[in-house]
Image 1: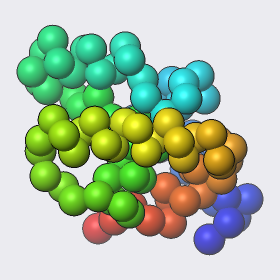
Image 2 (image 1 turned 90 degrees about the vertical axis):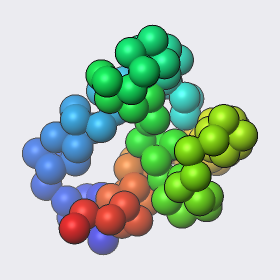
Image 3 (image 1 turned 180 degrees about the horizontal axis):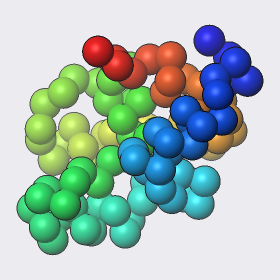
Length: 98
């Protein structure tokens, strides 16, 4: 589905709940990552929408530092290739919503 076919309220709600600073980072949100590390994950994960897309489309769901590092590198690379609306559209079409 094209992003233009999705209600603005829907994608805005997803951005607000999944990655508030989506439009202000380049694939990795260092503040969110630091918050997640310092709280040991109790205050939510540190993954951006782009990182979640990379994890779900390209990588395994293993919880290792190596996989997380690769995820971060690929997220930055993906953000260099796609603009934010394209990334959001890919996220909406590839993340499991069930």
